[in-house]
Length: 583
Image 1 (cartoon, one colour):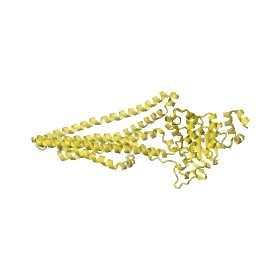
Image 2 (tube, helix red, strand yellow):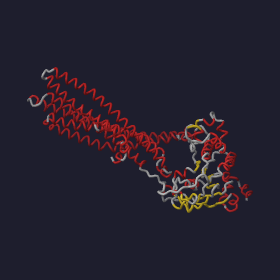
Image 3 (cartoon, helix red, strand yellow):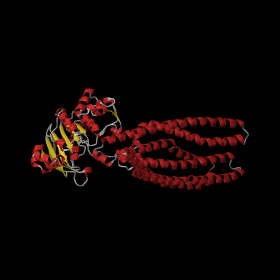
Image 4 (tube, helix red, strand yellow):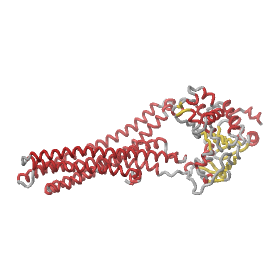
């Protein structure tokens, strides 16, 4: 229950509605408990004594109470639904905001499928538990306690005679509750796995088709689906044994009441009305026990979901603002310096991604980073805006350690074109001005022209108002990259990061983009990660990374004279003759 209790603060804003719901529920229970007494009155004072007035009066009272009970039940449903839906909304919002605060290292631990499950099915499970608790969670124990008390009030001797049956029933219920909790949690874990596989396949359906892996993915999904189904069948079969056992115990109790009560009635020690009322209370006592088993399942599901929700809410972003922060000058290029920087992913002791990196990017310079796949190029540019924190060493902007700058202030001065181009559903215009929603149409067009995107955008069916489909599937890779570049350029950032952002663009278009960026980003310190040598030729400084270390640094002509590694990369892409000509 500790996981549930940690989420109870989401109920506090709705304590009035929760109270109203519980008050209506108590009134419903009181009417339930009053009905057997009224039936006893009809039999003993009306039918047995041939008093039609008592029968009529009692019938009117019972009808009035039934109408009131319906109204009270509707009130309980209204407020319980309001509380449950509101709590679910607030939890989803809290999860969403928490995910937005995560650093890249946190997102490395929690994949998209897991986060989607927590935002959807886990939140729904907690919502259902909240609603069920307010609707029947209190009703079952109140009915059970009230019926037990009224059974002793009606006839204490009969109550003592069936007490062993009640104790056996309690023991059976406790057994099922203890067994059902872990089984239901296991179901949720298997459902979690099923949802993850489903999400991965829906998101990657095009890749599955491209690699002709539909049969493999069908088999993988069938396996987890069958596993989930088998577990459900085992649990449902186990649950199905409860109600026959409960029915048997109720019938035994009724037989005892009818046998013992009948003898006492013949002897004149108990009335027929009392026996009927007693049987009603017996059924009202044992019925809620079955409900409590069902409630235990809902609570088990809610507890398992609450644990996963708390896992996200309790996650502390690894990149944190310092208590005392410093300010950076705005509107101009920054001097970026790496001082003995080393980096491990997630702070592990694995082979470092970067080792003792020293690097200086002067204001307005373009720094190109070249190297083999996995050499550490993207890690360098991810450390610049503090997407990750360096494991050791420090990174400064204008001699200020980035750890002392608020993340929001830091990122406001950064324009990023990530390695994986991400576009949002909406218009082309909205995607370009995503970072500056108030940018004018002229500014949007100017940024698109600099990114060599204006011409193809103008030829789209609705130009800049053309809607981009989910993940930009109605655009080519090069078109998506150019829109992403325009989005970053529109910010006119102090620091511009292009992480292999022209890999899907032809060399001629890439050259045009570079020429346009000279004027557009002249007040930016730029970092350009590239695989193609043509991308880095005009950079002010080229950094060659190998195995997490800088092995060469300088302008193109300088590196052609001093770096064998750079010459080999140059020759491998442009040919040996080109290298000899350059030398």
